[in-house]
Length: 601
Image (cartoon, rainbow, N blue to C red; front, side):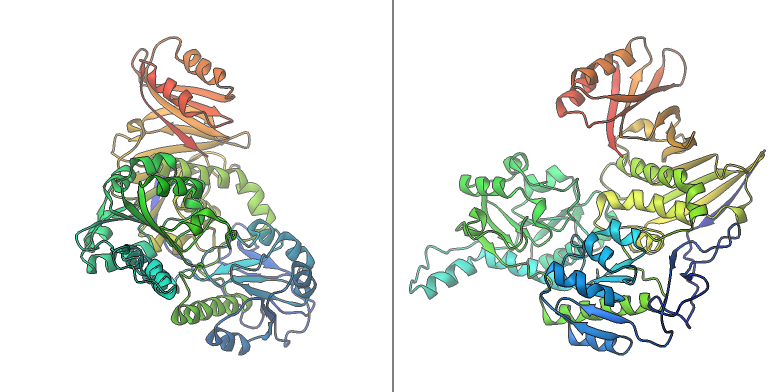
């Protein structure tokens, strides 16, 4: 017998300890902790535990390593001693950091592992005044118990406005004509531009900045489409934007504006192949990340006339080399990463990051925290394989979603013999959220910001617990993740009730995928997975195994789940390496295979 109890996602308030701070320097008999509601099963809290030493009355010291707006500095000075030291060398930073409780940087200062090691445990907060955190070693921060926060919202409008400014300047050759006039020339015929009204703009990435660009482009009379496989269609429709496939966006657009994060999936997403599909004479704007464009391929596309013009605020390497062919190209308008560079945005970012740093030093955990918190050893030890399982199930589920309506509703089911009070699922839910959001976003999800991040993206996560009879020695029997109201790249992943469904268990400490849709499988969640729906007949395992073997792809696991003998079956194959396009094509050409999908873990 099993019973279930459902509950909807709910943010648990933080417990505050106002008399202490993360920067306190008096020796204490026990660790000072910043905690969410403690688990009833364990006496220790579930988030960050920090040793504190020194005088309780002493102000913390905040190092501001790059220029910050006056409003932000004022907030910091009301709470802490502020040391504004700019243009520090790595050696100088490592020397100074041992005297600081927090540091605030922009993109120019690298907070490396050496910095955290030099801090000798005193550094408790790193504040990034902006969105990207490529210059902060997150793993080292977490290892050293240091919270990393950023300021992701204050520069949204500034970045969108700069995108529109580049769009208009490019269309009317403003930069080139300006340089020509200043050189003493008057070349009106040379710099005839193109109109924006009635043209199709493809906004690639419909997040905060992308949606603001779309609003402004609609006001200029442009027809706006967007590609973002996980954006809600109703949010796009509300401002008159149609969500389309990637290929439809790049093949029909007169202008393309990039607003996607730089992830392994989006790295060099505009390349020779994608440029070849575009309209001849397309114009491209990039105020997102330089790495989403293959810069050498863009030069070739400009020279061939496929791309008429490009307006770029970001580059793969910043600053670019003086002889960079892309920057020097006559049909390229370039700016030095000015997306957030307005007086208003700079002040907004300064205030946002100052508030986040001060809050963290006071013992509050910011919703903009971007690194994983520390958890008690006994909790992590028991839940560790289930934490891995939860994240991988989230990653698998979201990769099975076909583009279109976007992911809005997720249901997570936990089956356990333990009473609800003895199983705290917040960490598991956070890891499922992480698995769903991180592959398609630049946001870093953890226990601190998971609920906030899900809510911000309109993602509703409900939880159900199935109470099983039996011994409660193991915390969980299985975890099941369902995504409702979406189409799937792999039709067999759709359950009888119409949702994408994946289920997993931990076996001998190793996470396993045990169900896809209505099919039972058993494959270790290591490396990556190929799922194939096939006609159940002899020789299929050998056929697919031989194709992978010929490509030197090592198979770690194979499992077949079937409805009945000689009927349909789903084969799950664990592989250590990513098969080539040719190998995947060969698998798809096997006559008995009806559909297949490759999933990265």
